[in-house]
Length: 349
Image 1 (tube, rainbow, N blue to C red):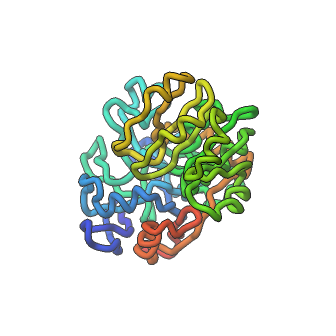
Image 2 (tube, rainbow, N blue to C red; image 1 turned 120 degrees about the horizontal axis):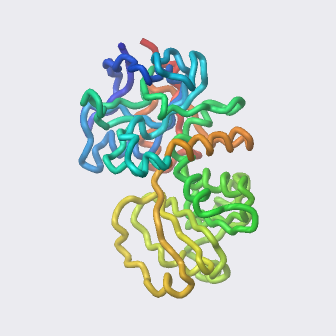
């Protein structure tokens, strides 16, 4: 089927209109008219080939919200007109142990990503949500709860599940103390979720002037991580720290703020930490450093349902697709509160 989107043709070119072919729906496929697509920092990295693995042309976008326009003959969970979302993954082997346990993001054979991937059936490239329509297997389509703002819901498909998954797995809730490192696209969602789960929430930040916004989002306390006295005052306090910082940084100062059996979860940085982690800081207090990567389909649906009950969406700035290159430049300057979302109504064939 004909589709139109915005694509990067090389690492040095701006995204520009791109006509391409989506596959026809297979029996278990859902066809979705895309209404909104969130802009993730990963989109920029892949469009500009920062990791060295981009397949051009690339149509980014894995925070997709839209409306079902057609379903395959074997589809049972969705009908035409349903409001749905599609996140970072559009297929896996579905048979390995992680897949069978609902953590498809850890598929032993590798997940098929929504864009810059290869379809495991026909070998063709996958194209993402900066486009007017998308096709995905029913298993990887999420139901959007009634009443959620669709633009604000789009980033839940990546930023939302990335922070929900570790909070949920490590037991954030009433009586627990959660700290969030960094106030950005991920950090602001982590604060909202931790607060809604009933935890006492603290923001770690190196920047002054964020207190008002952090408290609006749900933070109970703000700690300037560059201030030794403030860090000492929260020594041994936190059960869970969600570290959303997207670049290399020293995590050792935060380990001292963990309680016995506390855990620091890295969700923002995927590279090598250049500063060695102190083994003593882990041994004395039985603390742990771990990581978490997006989330499986059951957890993502659970997160969306929780958002529906609690009225949680991302703080967004909605833009037309024609402003995507400007948005990328602003992303590099952290000039957004807290997530760009593309309104695809301006992109129609």
